[in-house]
Amino acid sequence: MKGPNYRKIFASIFVFTCIYGGLLALLLKIEAGVPQSKLNDWQDAMWYLVETLTTVGYGDALPVTYWGRMIGFIFLLSSLGVYGFIIGQIANFMSTIREQKELGLNGTNFKNHVVIIGWNDFGQSVISHLIGAGRQVAIITKDRGHIDIIREYYPMDEVYTLFSDYNNFEQLEKANIRQASIVFVNLNDDTEKLVYIINIKKHFADLNYVVTLDNGNLKSTFIHAGVTYTISKNEISSKLLASYIYEPDVAFFSEELIAYAHEDDEYDMKQFLVRPDNPYAGTPYDKAFFELKKEYNVILIGLVKNSNGQRKLLKNPEGSVKIEAGDYLVMMMDAKGKNKLGKLFHIEEGI
Image 1 (cartoon, rainbow, N blue to C red):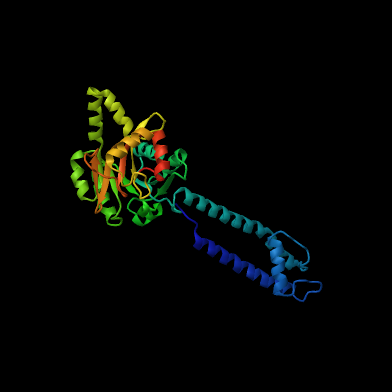
Image 2: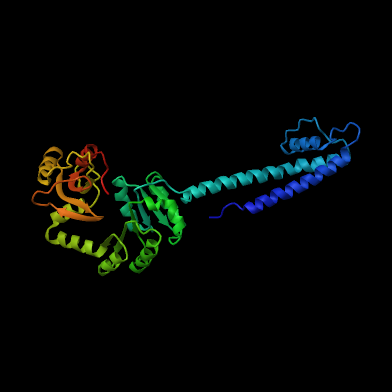
């Protein structure tokens, strides 16, 4: 984006000042001391210049000599150029402000949001589910043409867009990336993603990263590079396809569960943090299981415990397992159940 050329503006102002200063000095030399002249000092001359340039023309200060009026004629005609210059600079300034906002150069105050680096059709489908789940998203793209497309689809209070080179890590701060819950690296191929992960980890080492892989054999490589979650597109699609072949009803239900429930009769899986004021904090898992099903038609299917920064998923655990503050409850529910639990737990879903 090309911003205003302040050096050129200041140079223009300096030239105008010198020209008008010289003409005022010449006007005073011609008019001072002439009978009936009201331009006898610098104060009178400045007043006359301001009257003329602003086209106010009170008529209380006028040159009376021939050459004085010629200078006044120059002032009068040049006022058009001055107005054009001022209006042009104001328009340029307003245009710059508007473009900076459109390109995201003013930054965002999103927190606990998802940062997506790279824009394509796959990223667009991911964003639709994230917005449906009530999550704010920051998209970083290096293609200027993507900005208008994104702005057409999503409101600015849900999706922030930043036009930037991906390797300009200082610029990524405008997306408030340090306050993001996770960063989705959505670049073209696995090699490009791996190189980028290594580079971005040098600047933002404490963030969670997720990538999708074309080659599922690279999962361990990405994990060692610092990626939190890796997803193989081919692996997921092949499992789902096989499931559709020999158990289509299970496959259909599974596909619904991993997506956001848009309608009241649709189901998906969600996880909620157990805060100290959660009514199930300190409750045995099996007791919570039956109460959630009876009261909210919600099926508790797992529990996530945090220990020394490590997350451990307990899948429908047996025995005397207690739910504690700081745990996450993993549940299957419809949209009605999600709304009820949100009010009960006083917290939004997700990490």
